[in-house]
Structure formats: C-alpha cells, structure tokens
Picture (tube, rainbow, N blue to C red):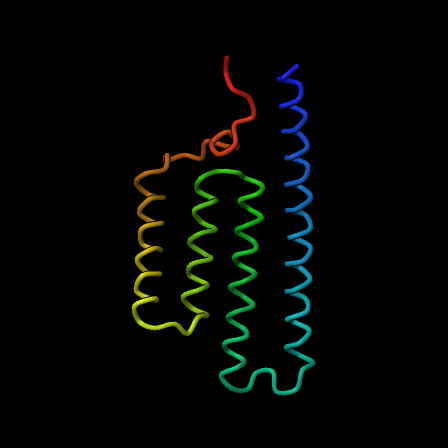
Length: 137
C-alpha cells in the first residue's frame, strides 16, 4: 500500500513539473516575442545605457528560464548546477554591487564549474540522480 501511495505522489509531482515546465516555456516565448515587438515599436529603444542594461537583463533572464525548464525536464545534477551557474552569472552582469561582491560571485561560478567537472558523474545518469522514484528493496 505504501508503494502505491508513493508511486501516485511521484506521478502527480511529475505531472506538476511538466505543467510548470510548459507554463514557463510559454511565458519565455511570450517575453521573447514582447521584447522583439518592443525593439521595433518603442521609440528610442536602442538609445543609451538603459537599453543595454535592460536588454542584457531580459536576455539573461530568458537564458536562466530556459535552463530552469531544462532542469525540470532532465532532473539531473548537471542541469541543476547549470541553473545555478546561469543565475549567478546573471547577477554578476546585472548587479551594481561592489568589487568584493563581484569577486565572491565569480569565485562561486568557478566553484560550480569545478564541482560540475570533478564531482559530478561524467555521463548523465537520468532522473533517478536527483529524485529517485522508488527505493530498491
């Protein structure tokens, strides 16, 4: 009985993850379309430093969103680390924090890359790597 309940909850969680990935993908596509529309319709869109900051913010946010969807779909440690790398890199590019904060963030990205290369398995194991569906008896 316990295995049936766990299996049912696993199936519900997989369904919710699929729905979340689908909704996130739809929103990302909408943001890309809206941004392209703004590029051609908003007067002065390409003028000044505000353009570059806004454009980088939008593009890097979309990339982080794509990595997040990939993490939901693949469910591996590699995809989770990729999301952390992208999110930290986004923060480095977008934020106006001081030198020490940027240095710490850069060190974090380097450590994440090192962990991905040296601590994680070389091949993608699959969805059982992060969330095992069933415990082997």
